[in-house]
Image 1 (cartoon, helix red, strand yellow):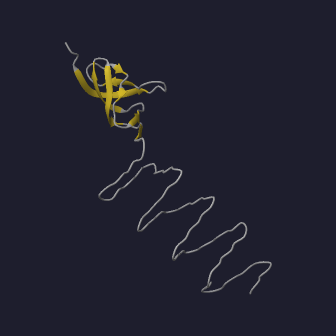
Image 2 (tube, helix red, strand yellow):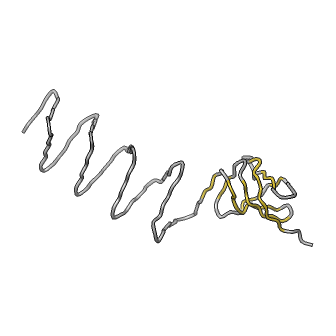
Image 3 (spheres, helix red, strand yellow):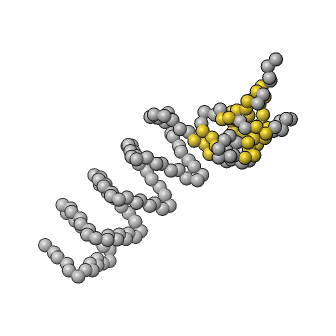
Length: 171
């Protein structure tokens, strides 16, 4: 006689660092089990998560996450290409982070909008056919030498131009 297969929800009671989570079956048995993951992604449950369980006898697997705060990780071996025939959107209520030794962006047009932006770099090289900048106010501090090389340079002010320095060389 074969042992019947069961499917039920389970509530995570504890997540030990050295083994599977302890989960209470939310069916008539109420048994506490240690199910093995059977998800197509890595999932580390958190206490209180509600999991979908599938089992037969004492063998139990996690086959879904009904509601959870645990950590999900989608990881692949080798190269991966993510493509959408329409727009591809990434979002995160806690933010979006990208980490890599090198990041390349190739596009016909790049739009960026933020309430504030911070860029920190050991070195920054930038080149463009034309740069247009508009600001209500601009302040730049250079701790060291500052050099601009141009075929023609023009500074225009509506009211005044102030040059402050111990030495001014022209020509």
